[in-house]
Structure formats: C-alpha cells, structure tokens
Amino acid sequence: MRIVPTLGWAFEDEDGERLDARLIPLLDAIASTSSLAAAVIACEISYRAGWGLLRDYERKLGKPLVRLERGRGAGLLELGESLLQAQNVARERLARVWSDVSLDMGTGVQRTERAPPPMLRVALSHDLALAALAETLTESRTLSLEASVMGSLKALKEFADGRTDAAGFHVPIGDMAGSDRSPFLQCLHARRDKLIRFVDREQGLVLPQGNPARVRNLRGVVERGLKFINRQRGSATRLLIDRMLAAENLDASRLLGFEKEEFTHAAVAATVASGAADAGFGLRAAAAEHGLAFVPLVRERYYFAIRAKNSGKASHVRFVDALRSPALAKLVRRMPGYDATGAGSVTGIEVLRRGEAASRSH
Image (cartoon, rainbow, N blue to C red; front, side, top):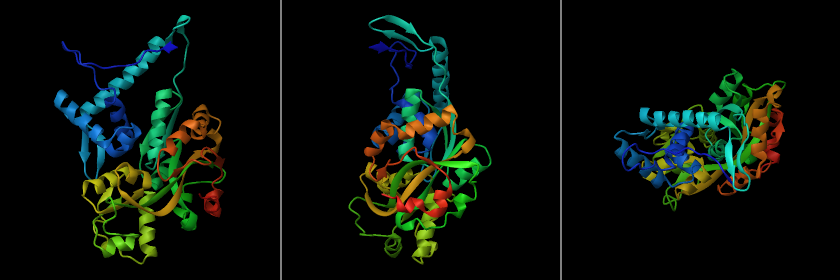
C-alpha cells in the first residue's frame, strides 16, 4: 500500500471547514464543457447535486462562481476562475516539491522523479464520453488535454490553420452515410492528416418523458407546433438538423424556436427537462441522464484529425492508448447509445470519401 500527497482546501477560520472535494473538479469540467449538465456527467454527480453545490458555495463565499444562462451554457466567473487557477498552480508546485514522494507501508518513504504529463491541444465538438475520459486522464496524470469545445467545422478550421494539435468531429453513418462530407474534407489533406476513430453514438429527438406528443421525426415536431431548442450554427449537429429538414421539405421557419440555440448536447437535454422547450435534437445518453424520451434518427462516428507527422509524439501515442484502453470501454458501457468498438484505430481521411463508415456501422 502506498500513500501519496494530495491537495485539499479549507476556510481560514476557527472551524477550518474543508471545501467539498467535488467543487473544484466541477469547476474544471464546466470550464472544459461550457455546460453544467455536461460537467455533472463528467464528474459523475447528479444535476441537482452540482447545482446545489454551486449555490451553497455562492452563499458561503459571498460571490457566484459560475455564470448560468439559458441558451448560452455555463462559464466560470472571476471567483471560479481564481479557484481553478489556484488549484492548478498548487498542483504544479506540489508536483515540483514532492516529485511524487510516496509512503510505501512496507518499505517507508520513497522518492521517484516524474516528469509532467505531455499535453495535447484539442479543438472539438462536444461529447459526453470524451468529457468523462478527459477527467480520467487528468486524475491519472497520463495526459493533459487542453480541450476547447466548439462546433465540428470550426474545430477542423482551427486544425487546418495549425492552432490546435487535433480536431474532434462527427459524421453520420449507416443510412445517412452518403450525406455530403465536403465541409469536413475541405480542412483535411490526404498526405498530411490521419484520423483516429473514437466512438459511435446515437442522435435523435430529445423529448419530455413519455413523449406525450407522440412525435417520431422533425415533421411531427413542426406539425404539432412544439417549441424546439436548436444547436448552434457551425456545429455538425446543426448541419445534420438542416439537412434533415431539407430532406423532409420542411421550411426551417416553421420550426418554432429554430433560432434559439444551445452549445452542447447536455444543455439541449437540460432545456427540455426544464420545460423551456418541448423538443430538441441530441444524444441518447444526454436524454437518458435527464430521464427524457428519445427517438433515434441517426448514428454517427466521432473522429479526431491529427497530423500524420506527429503520430509518434508522446502526447499522441498516449491519447491513442487511452482510446484503446479498458477505461474508455468501461466509461462507454455506462452511456446509452454509445459504442467504443474500434476506438483508437488510425486510418486515412479516405474513409470519409468512400463511405467506409456506413459499411462498418453498428
């Protein structure tokens, strides 16, 4: 058995009350996902517990930690950013001072030098499984993921311009595998880039529990006049919604609430769960987290684009290893609508052109 030093925070008063150990990981997850709903999933706590934790510490500290705005997701305010920054600085100093000093109960104090984990900058489309995996990587010090959440197309543009090491994006497979992929391919080059497969996942209509309006597709949402919560322009999910409306010969202006946007799957589900919308489009796992009804409409495959020349770097190797690991498989098994088969396999961008994703979909 080994004992290792860890960080803890307490109030500097006579009581010395310790901060709840869940608070700073929750702030970190909010900073990464821009969504309280996604953050609580990554931290494996309920939405009510996460919201209550923020409310309690706002009262104790006298200032709010997080900005929560419907339609704009969540973000850290000055105090929340300061707490998170203090945690990161303290963690770095602890690592430098102790250099992984540990106490082995059999042999006594041991000291081993340990370099900081390599860092991978990733611009990516929001995904629940990736948020959970990033937390696992941080805790294990295997890899430091600097993740910026944005739409798939914007992430690929960041990658093409060299502003990030990798880009996470998703494309339809199965019946919709033949949809136009040129917007994705415009930012990728066959000789320069490789794709790493992540997960397959299920998207569809997110509806109140029991699906009281009995809708089965977007036409049903339009014809029943349901309030819809949309995804932001530039996201692959928004592109998918637009294409499905066109396929149904539906005018977007007939979709009530089409102009109201959210930035993550979790935020869409939370909006429907709160009653602010009657329907949304998102992941089965996000719907399940809130006990909502779900109508499957499409399966997708999520990829990461990387530079082929960087595939041997420690950060890239560790990332691929993490995608192939039992830890990811375990995380995904708990998430409805997800499948990690083939995660971590590396291929060329030609799979996007020839529709290989369709023939291998699950």
